[in-house]
Image 1 (tube, rainbow, N blue to C red):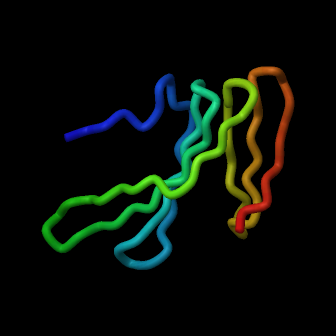
Image 2 (cartoon, rainbow, N blue to C red):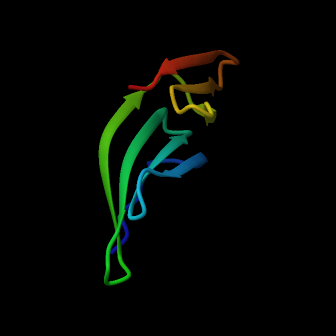
Image 3 (cartoon, one colour):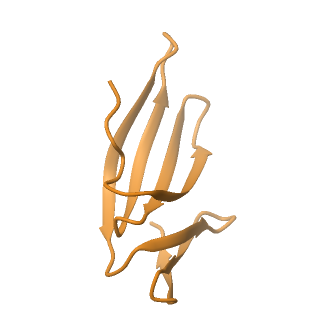
Length: 88
């Protein structure tokens, strides 16, 4: 059973592991949303994905990037602006 992650094209997916079985994904989309997802890999070869936060922006997001230290998310909008978020 697949559910759509966004209502429009996804431009970027950032994925990283927190532990051996748990990770995180950050997605940005043309639907003006950045979504934060928890990912868990189970023993029976399934993947559980759960939305835990969502940011709504004023324009379509064309790209997002996570800093190497995972403290900042930088994203660009269709209006040619660049935004920086502090990641908690």
